[in-house]
Length: 138
Image 1 (cartoon, rainbow, N blue to C red):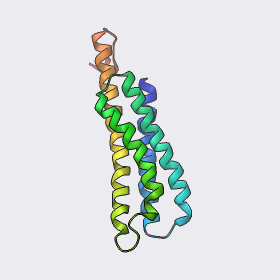
Image 2 (cartoon, rainbow, N blue to C red; image 1 turned 90 degrees about the horizontal axis):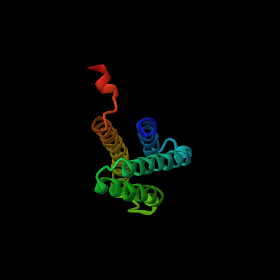
Image 3 (tube, one colour; image 1 turned 180 degrees about the vertical axis):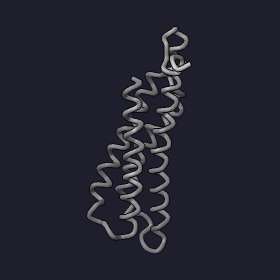
């Protein structure tokens, strides 16, 4: 579970950075052709968040945080797909900012879940007397 958490954490980090860069380029109106790539990568980011949430359940992370990740992950692609039709005109920038904040929330939640999973695993290993990497370094 530790390796899977690490891989998913790095996926959230890397895909999140690429998503932010793609989003900014698309936002400037210079790369509408990249929207489908942005959407596909966004779906993989949500799937990684959900996978971390499942691992969070197994690691007994706070159920409220896990539930929030599932709900947030469901809202994210809906907002992404629907955003073009929301608040058209001069106020559309509000939806774009909301979309950016929701995306940042996915990244932040993924990072937070991964951290808590790793903490729970380390705590579980210590209570069971299993040596951890931190313990070995001391």
